[in-house]
Length: 205
Ligand code: SF4
Ligand code: SF4
Image 1: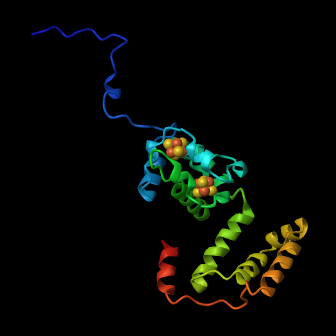
Image 2 (image 1 turned 90 degrees about the vertical axis):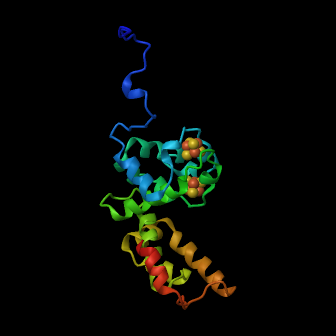
Image 3 (image 1 turned 60 degrees about the horizontal axis):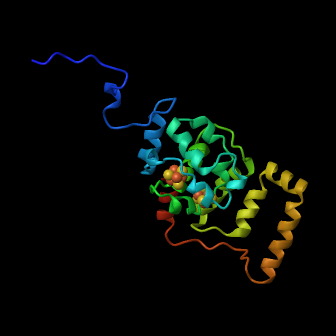
């Protein structure tokens, strides 16, 4: 029988010889949870930044799309739910399309936005968060969104109205709305969709 060889510094430790795993500094629970709920292969990201380069609104984000993915790998839930990024994202899916590893970045960000929406974390972009909520409510009411009713519901929030008056956005909105109405592009009465049950089920999920 051959004697056991003494281990040297060049030997691979036992815990590293199996399949490689990415463990965040707060454990991988959050990573596994987001991967399980979205089906996105977030572990496959190698931080090439193509998603960020493809994103049309990354200049307005506090955490870039590739960093969002890294934060998920590291389990930085609170930091993610507080970002401007999750509210600024347009869900245009350019990031997902350009990812060489098929990481569904857009779906991940959308999922984080819903997580923030259901959490007690104060959103970084309060007005966008109110808009998101109002949009979903309107969708559940009529099955489609009527711009006139959407803006009416949004402007009923005192914080939103105050901000719009302060910045002059309300005046611009009224001028634009009138122009759209004049050209027949703004309907004053909403039409209810025939598939309301299905729409509500999708929103509930
Ligand atoms: S493009 Fe894909 S692999 Fe590259 S940083 Fe973005 S998510 Fe990661
Ligand atoms: S889905 Fe969001 S993060 Fe991705 S490219 Fe579009 S705006 Fe950027």
